[in-house]
Image (cartoon, rainbow, N blue to C red):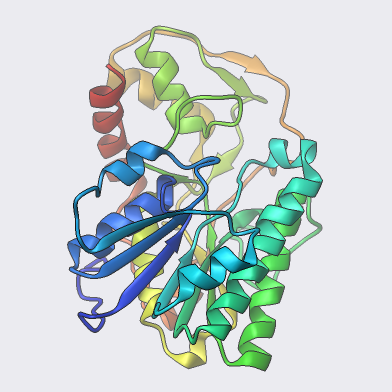
Length: 325
């Protein structure tokens, strides 16, 4: 089950861009656990030094501090690499509304730099992070590839552009690319701090400190919250996928649907606290409901997620209890 059955040549070299980040560090960890050589490229703008230090001393792990907006850095990082897992992007819909030019440079040009560097250096597979935000205002549930609506934020636009560039590289340059549309990933090492922190770690941080979290909107918005181990599985299975599955984008989620207000009260119960939330305005650019159809990834990538929301949230609570206490 999961990704334990996925195998690669033992001398395979993997490059994880954004490898000092939340998802990227989990990818590095899984690859090292499987005995592979891992190269991490990160400029530490949102990634954490402590996520690099996790693997300090492992001779199979190399950290490159560099920026994907610099093409020469991308070329050097791809030298001798078999598989690229491209996670180096800035997230956050609200922040993208404040910084559209930066998001274009970092998320679109940075991805194009990596695609071109991978092509030049003969990389076998290029797997990259897309987002459920590409579905925009399409109201139908579950979200199904090929049924996208109008984009609601610069962040969503960057991810749609990345998908289109990747298709061109598969179509014209023979680089096998696989886009993974992540749905609200959560788990250990996700940053709980700052104005743009994801909702689950932010709730946990505040509740553990005895403070009242703010819920944007009425709390009745729903999301397909996806534990990070499922995302690791999808990345490894995409790297092992056949050429026939390349040039496509795939939903990566558990396929469930959780309401924010229910999650909030579930967390208070699990933590044994009695704290009522505050309610604020809806966030600009946010969608109301999100739920993924994962049949395409199941069929073409062999994706079969092990981690339900309940199992994942229990593991996340345990981790944040230990690390935020």
